[in-house]
Structure formats: structure tokens, C-alpha cells
Length: 144
Length: 186
Image 1 (tube, each protein chain N blue to C red):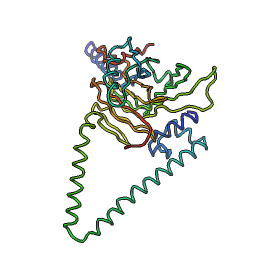
Image 2: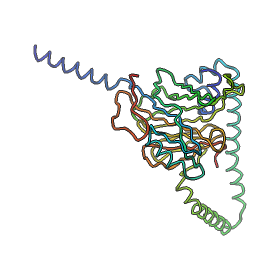
Image 3: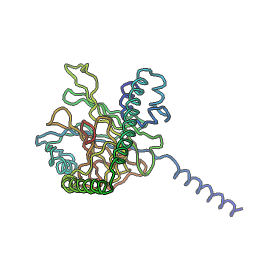
Image 4: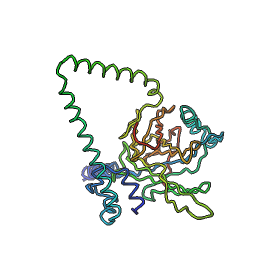
């Protein structure tokens, strides 16, 4: 594996692979290449930061949720949330029938084929007239 | 004595059959690279694929109506995992790499698929380096086909990679609508 292949592989690698926990060509290359190791560490750092942000979010929401003093306020909030979710679901049904999913992580088609696009890309499943053929469309940008 | 020989013969036959069933099976990847545009060009050599792509991609916001086969073939991991294609002054490189060493499972294979592009001008490769058109980690049940499409240069052109894994020593003669049974002896 050369540096170019390594940089491409890094985009697709699991965290365990980035951390060198999985034997293979990627780990072998990272052991001997300081430049690619630096890229990997930066990517790992970004992932850590995102994870920290993600973990911090539920905590702050929890703090907000503790503030309402009456059960009625909580019930009203829940009802509004459910209604909003229902409206969004109904309005998206037609679109979802044609383009079945947009996911930032692993996308699984009804056929059992699954895929995960590289960082910075997103994928959609396009309905296929042949059940043995699964069509993914890739585009730039994160998940919607 | 005859009975002992018979028992030994049966034992050896059973052992051979077991060894054959446990032997790693070679997986081949049938691939096709297709450029899609707004034109009317059809895949005359593969009308089934043409119809499928036309049906799936001509609608929604994609609206691709013309398809040109750039390259097709069968990739055998033991003979390399990279295909280089020169098409209209653009140098494409397709890499299909089995992610797991035990990618000989009957059930599915997990592949890293990478497609890059490099412009060639006056016989020289552009200094801009490779542009990654597609990079994905795909898990495909054996015998199924996956079509990976992405916009290429502008809104009018897209590039499509079609892959189907098959176990070599169990070629299916019931052809799928897309692709061909891999010839592992090639």
C-alpha cells in the first residue's frame, strides 16, 4: 500500500483500524509512514471531538428538561413534538417511497446490500426494477 | 480383508469430500464502468443493463438518459485489485479490495471500492493529482449486483461502477439480468 492508497483507505477505515488494532495493509503502512500517521491522528482527533460534542448534547438537553415545574408543560411539549414528527413523516412519505434512505453511516438496502460512503459523502438508495440489483447514488456533502 | 479395504476407501472418500468442502473458494468480481449523460447513447451490448439504468436513473433529479460502457471485466483478487482506464483524456483507476481476509464466504463479501480520476493533457498526467470520485465500503451478498453512481465532472455527467461478486467454482448459469458469470480460468 502506498501513501495515496493509504489516504483513501483512511477515509473508509473503522476507528479500530485507525488506531492500528486491526492487522492488515493499512496498519503495516501506518507503522512505517509518519506522514500518513499524522493524517490518521488528525482524523482521530476530529472523531474524538465529534464524539465529545455528541455526548455533551444529551446532558444539556437533560438539564433543560429538568427545568419545567409542572407535568402539564412536559405533556404539552411531548404532544407538540409527536405532532411535529407525525407531520414531517406524512410530508416525507412520497419522497421516501422513491428515495428510501439517506444516512450518514451505514446504509442498508432491502436486498441486504449495505454500504458506507467515505467521509464527506452521502448515499441514497434508488429503487431498482430488479430485486437482485441495488443502486446507490453517492454525492458530496454530509448526511441530510 | 476386503471389508477393511472398503471401509478404508469410504473413509478416504469422505475425507477428500470434506477437504474439498472446506477449501477456500475463489471469489471473482465482475465489474462494469459506465459513463452516464443527458444524451441518447444506449448500451447496445447489454440491453438489460441499459433498460435498468434508464428506468432507475432517468427519473427524479438525476435524469440520465445516455449510457456509455467504458470498461467491463472480471477482477480476480489474486491477480490484482486495480484496473486503470483511459477514456477521453481522463485516466480512471478502479480499486476493488476485499476488506476481510476471509472474503471467500459463500454469503457475502465486504469490499472497499475506490474510483479516482486524473486528467491527461497532451499525454501528460495532470499535476492536480487524483480526484476521488467514489470511495465506499460495500457489503454485497454473493451473486447480487451493486450499482454505485456519482456525479462526475458536472451536472450533466455521472460515472457508474457496477460490481457483482461470485464464487468461482460454483458458477451460476442462471444469469442475472446484469453482468456475466465470471470466467475464473481467464
